[in-house]
Amino acid sequence: MPLRYLFVDMNAFFASVEQQDDKSLRGRPVAVIPTKAETTFCIAASYEARAFGVKTGTPVWQARKLCPGLITREADHDRYVVVHHRILDAVGSVLPVGRVMSVDELSCKLLGDERHPDRAIELARRVKAAIYDRAGEWMRCSVGAGPNELLAKVAADLHKPDGLTVLRDDDLAADLGRLKPTDFPGVGPRMERRLKLHGIFTAAQLVAAPAKTLAAVWGSRVLGEKWFRVLRGEDVPEKPTKRHTVSHSHVLPPELRTDDGALGVLVRLTHKAAARLRKEGYWAGGVSVGVDWKGEAGAAPAPAGWGKAGWGAGCRLAHCQDTPSFLRAVGHLWGKRPKDGAAGVPFKVGMALVDLVPAAGATPSLFEADRRAAGLSHAMDGVNAEFGASVVYFGTMWGLRDAAPNRIAFGRIPDLSRAVS
Image (cartoon, rainbow, N blue to C red):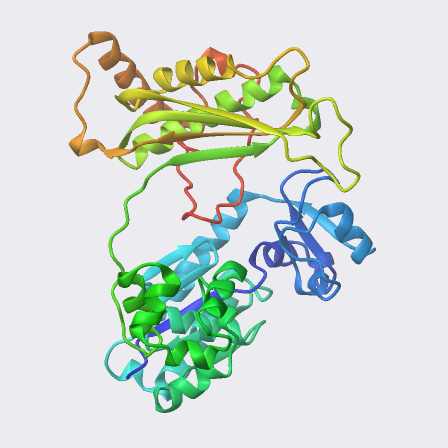
């Protein structure tokens, strides 16, 4: 089967942006963190830090023990998004960008003679050079070429940093057989255990497994058939996905780790989520909120960091998209939280708008007050898009307009809209 995709994976993207912008950080161990606190965790680590065992998810206090010279930088979402768009522009100057998976991953479809291995390698090198020229000399990427998007991603992961790997069709099964099962996207420790329960211990066995076995492993005939075909190099089209939630969460800075501070940040998150909901064209039929506490209620926190205590609640709404309705729901739910010493110190809050339906299929309210609230919310979006985020907001957010700044978007494509951000 021919090569059909190039997959571009930026190496240590967030840390590399920091090193690109600050030359004094180049060649030194750097970790990007969500907030200035030793109890938080590393969002990303440079390759110099990774050499000491620092990786995504490592607590900062532990990272400093592993790497005494570690330099930390607080994440700057908007700056990373700017570089993300420079990278899209750079890749687009060589090949049309087919799909953007995240802030640091994208794929391009190959056509005609671009599918020849030598031509694919030439294009991959041109992509690397374009990123170097337009995003900066410290912005390295690994590029993989394969017969489908998943295998092109596998190829990109094989040699980091700054790798270039082609999974050629002439010996695809042998090439894949030399990998580990966990080298395939979607096969983590839990799925690896399920594979072993079905007698699959190596990548070679995974590639050779019949569709019936893979269906049993994944618990789905459709998924089993898809994996069977993908592992043989077929290009299986992705089914369109539907958004199910719009959510935001935020680790509270020390000065806001109070009930009032936590509620204020929840209100700010609700403003952001409601604006995103309207921008993406949905209505929501429910709201949920949650809080993580420092340590267990009435007990000292564990020496290793924060405890796992927490609380959450949700409620249903008539489908709507106006900010006042969501704020009332959040206030109602917050009033149900444990009080009078039953809870710990708030450490992290989050909220989600759930049960989404496309705006085109939603039924507007018959009540004038509801229609006015929706119109007001859209008017706020227009003003904020023109003059800057949170120029206009509801009074419950007073004093917290800059709370909960944008964080790195791992699971969605970043949004630079001023109505949202």
